[in-house]
Structures are given as C-alpha cells and as structure tokens.
Length: 300
Ligand code: NAD
Image (cartoon, rainbow, N blue to C red; front, side):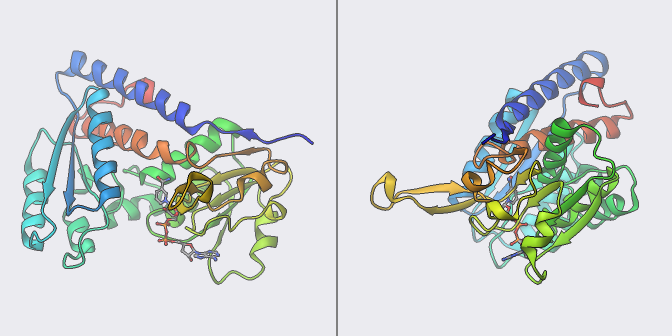
C-alpha cells in the first residue's frame, strides 16, 4: 500500500526563516532599518516560557532585534496595558506579541485590543480580523498563515478544492478558513456540533484539524489522496517512555491516516514550526509597511 508524503514543516519553516534573514539584511543595507519584535510574557507558565525563549532566539538568528518583557504573574492589568502603549509608541518596535494565555486577573481582550494594528504581528486585533474578512491587506495570524503556506507548497493552486476545517476558534479555525477561502477553495467549517463529522471530513481535498482532541480524525475519515494538515498539539501519556512519560500527538491518528492521505503533516514537525517562522515574516511585513518600503521579493 502506498504511503502519504510526509510534509516536512520543520524544513519549510527553516527555509522561510532563512529568507526572512535575507530580507532583513536587504532592508538594513538598502533602507538602514532593522525590524524589531517585542514579546510580552506575564507569569511563569512553563510552556509559554519555552515559546518566548524560542521566539527571541529565532528573532535574533534572523538578524532582527528582540525585545523581551517578562513580567511577574501578579502584574496589574493596567501595567501590562501601559507597557503595550509604550511599545506602540516605540519606533524601534515593529511587531508586538502578547504571549497568551495571560493570568486570569487580566482581560486578554483588553490587552490585545491595545496593540496598534500596524504592529499586530499575531493578527489578533479586531482591525486585523476585519481586514482579513474584508479581503484587505493586513497582518494575518501566524499558525493559519503557515498552514496555508504548506498547503500551497504541496498542491500549488488551490482553486476549487474543498477544504474542511475542523475547529472554529478565533486563533486558528476562523482565520485559516478565511485564508483558504481567499485561495478560492470551497470551505466547510466543522466543529463540535457538526453532524456526521466523519462524512464531512471524507469530502475534503484538504483537511485541517484544529481541535485539541488527540487522534480525533481517524483513517476512515480521510478521503484517499487528501492533503491532511494537523494543527493540533496534544500532550498524552507515553508509557513506552517510562513512568510518567509523555509525548506530543496531533488531532489526527497519523499512522491510520498515512496509508490513505496523499500528503500529511506530522506532529511534531509539521505545522508547529511554521508559527514562529510566520511571526518573523509578519514582523518584516509590518516594518516595511511602517517604513513605506515594499516587502523584499524573497518573502513574496
Ligand atoms: P480551541 O479550544 O480554542 O478551539 C477548538 C475548536 O475545536 C472549537 O472551535 C470546537 O468547536 C472544536 N471542537 C472541539 N471538540 C470537537 C470535536 N469533538 N469535534 C469537532 N470539533 C471540536 O483550540 P485552538 O486554539 O483552535 O487550538 C486547536 C489545537 O491547535 C490545539 O491542540 C492547540 O494546541 C493547537 N494549536 C497549535 C498551534 C501551532 O503552532 N501548531 C497554534 C495554535 C493552536
């Protein structure tokens, strides 16, 4: 039985980060500015700390400036908002990202809405979301952008293909569906109340799983030859790694889908690495827009 092509998101993301580095060098040489990304982390959530550390490292590796603001978990909301306002006003900062989730005493919506849409490299402000829906130029959420990039890299022109997105979150499901619509796909959004989810999924040429339920999508849910993009990241027990061992799995039963799909992203190493690469790309885009210069060709 033939196997699906394993989509190497790690390699694609490394290539994109290298192109970001080239663009940054070009901007410095031609226009004398260096894109800067500010990341705000409130509290000591271990996973968030790892993400922020990686973001800082990859930002510097791409030749950009990384501003890291680590605040204690009990920082008052007003202080976080004040910091975002300071970053909004700082001309050396072109992108602002608040690492979510924020501690429960802070209104995430209020903090995100304080970010200047011109610096909203996470694409989460209402202005960015509105621009995406209206088909206007703007900053697009990173994981959805990375998902569509991998689909286009695999399939080329996506016109007319049926994309089924499972999950309707603001962070992933809704923006990724909109991006596929912008690529002229026929898009179906499925979610926890969808009837006969398996049958809906079986009709997909491109199946995007953004749910957060380990191995929800079974092999029999996949249309033969489909492109399967697994956004889910779930930590599950892994007794094979000894007592208390864990591992990461996606929303798709990878082993079961492998003989059916045409191409498929693994977890880890699929969609995940695309998020930071797209964040860096968005920061360059924001910096170029602010400086009134075109995005270097290497990123188009
Ligand atoms: P979320 O919890 O906000 O949304 C999940 C969505 O799945 C909801 O819209 C819900 O309707 C739907 N859903 C829940 N149970 C379902 C079921 N049984 N059948 C069908 N639909 C169901 O989650 P999110 O923020 O969109 O994240 C989804 C997954 O993607 C998580 O595993 C998360 O860790 C992962 N994620 C990965 C990246 C990355 O960089 N690769 C980035 C963001 C999120």
